[in-house]
Length: 269
Image (cartoon, rainbow, N blue to C red; front, side):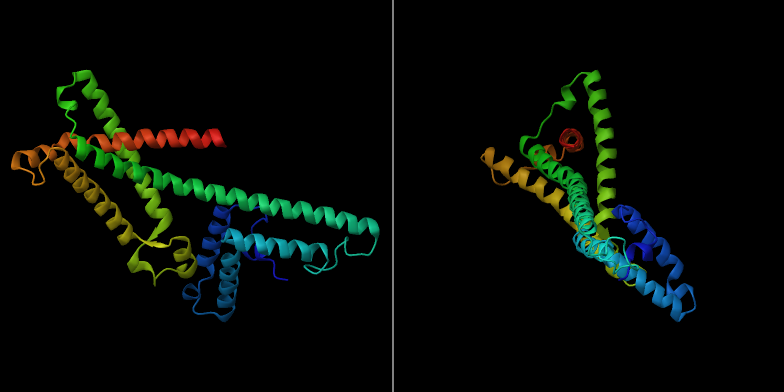
């Protein structure tokens, strides 16, 4: 039986990031375009691609680990195992070791799923907070900042800068983790697996973000006008709606929500 861990030169306990890094390193080294189309290198490249297709997917890796463990303890993976006998004690130890290994596989798969869920939440929560806060600002049209004392203005501006930097970081991380460039799909040496791990086009994600913000703001203005018993905004109302002060609050709200979510995750863990 092929040992995919040996193919990628990683430990059976390697994390998903370690497996991904090992695959990238070997892929750059063994890609046929960098080895004059060598047949031997092409076979090696195909082998690591196959290994990564299994080990890079948490569920497929769990299935593979179960089969590999059974093969190892039955002596069919890499020669005869010391457990591959009919001795009663050997059979008992084989069962215990196999169950322990299987439990490790399940625990690792659950841990991987939790990490993936936590990473996804780090993108979803800020985006939802951004859209909702933009909607709320457009509805309520707050004018607290212009009338606040100087000290309060300094605090608000500081939070705005911190929130903006934090939001940009979250957006950048999300784009790098879950999106790919359309014009690089056919040029990447990691085509199939990279697109599988990054299922969304960066252009589509950017459009979703931009139109989501604009849509939230326009919807908020419409709701605000309805509350004012006027469906057609007047010129001075529109100018008021576009007051730069309103754009200060969404990044601050995102920062607060994200900090609360991060604290909650730490408490759960």
